[in-house]
Length: 454
Image (cartoon, rainbow, N blue to C red; front, side, top):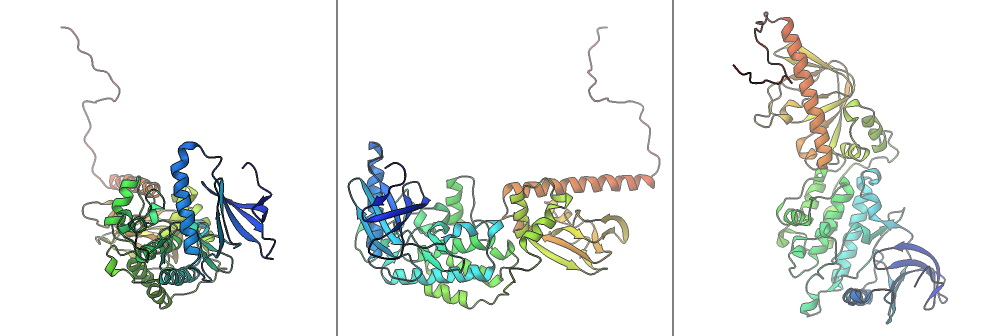
C-alpha cells in the first residue's frame, strides 16, 4: 500500500502519528464509537519473498499481542480493541493516547525531575504487577514502549513479545531471539533462560537509571562487550551522575537489577513499595539554577572550550555544584582524595609547605594531580579560597560513567593544565636558582650528520 490509506477495514484514517521498521501507526475513527483510536498497520503484500520468515515472526508477535490484550485491562496499559490478521495485511486497533514515549526524557537536555521520574516508574511497577497476576510477562520493557503525557499519565504498550507464563509450551517459554532491545535485557534473557516477571523488573530498573542520569547503566563499543557487562558488571550508582538523586534510589535500582533472581524484587508491588518509601526533596522546576542555567555557565568557561554540547550536558550530570566561604581549605597537600574541581566564580590560592605557588581564577581546574597520578594518587598542593567561591566538583567514580569522548577531553585539559603549571614552577625556581653550566657542544635538531672520507 503506497501513501496514506483513506480507510483500513471499517476505520477511517485521519493522519499518520508514527512509523517504525515494520508498521505505521495512524490516528483513526471508528464509525461506531465517538473516541478516536490508534491503528497500527502492517502490509505483507509489498514485502519481498525472502521476507516470508520475518512475516511469520510478525504474525506470531501479532497473535501474542492479541492473546495478551484479552487478559489485560489496566489504566496504565494501552487497551487493545481488536487485532485483524488477513493474508495481505494486519492491523491492531488500540486506545489512542496523545502522549509521547519515555525516549523523550532519557537525554541530558530533557530529563524530568527526580520526583516525576519516580512517580512514572511507580505506575509502571503496578501495571507490570497486574500483568503478571494475569499470567503475562512483557519481555520488552524499554522507554519506547512506555508512553507518558504532560500530566505524567502512563501507558505501557507493545505486548508483541509478551509471554503467557501459564501456558505449558517450550516455544513460549523463552525469548524470541532476534527481537528485543539488548541494552534493557536482563542477564537471564540474554542467556536465553526461561523467564518470569522478574525480567520485566530488571528492564524497568534500567529504564529508571536511564531517566535519572541520561545514560544507560551499561555501555560498550560492541554487542559482545555489552553482553559481558550486563552479565558480570555491578550496577553503577545513579546518584553519582545526578546529585539530585537520593542515595536510597541507588539501592532500589540495584535490587531491581540484581543478577541473582532470588535477590531481585519478587514482583512489581514490592518494587513500587520501595519507591513509595523514599524521601527526596522536590525541586521547583522553575528554580533559577536549572540544568539549562548550569549548562550555560559551564559552556562559557575556557576549560570546556573543546567540549561538544552533548559532553557539557554530561558534565552537568556528573558534577556536584559547590559553594565555599573565604579561607576554606578545599584540597589538602599530600592527601589521596582524587576529587578535582573547575572554578566558576571567585579566587583560589595554591600553596606548598605554606608557600604560595599560584592562583586559580574562574575557568581554571584545581586538585587534578591526585586524579592524574596513577601510582600514588597524591595531591601536590593545598587549595584555599581567597574569596567566597563557586565551583563544580567531579569524582573519578562519576567521571568513569561518562562517555569516552568526555573523559578524554577532561584528561587532555588536565594534562595541559599540569604542564603549564610545571612550566610556571620551573620559571619561579629559575629566579632563585644558581647559575647554570654553559654548554661547550650542541646537538641541533634537524641537522643531518654525514660521514666524511679521510
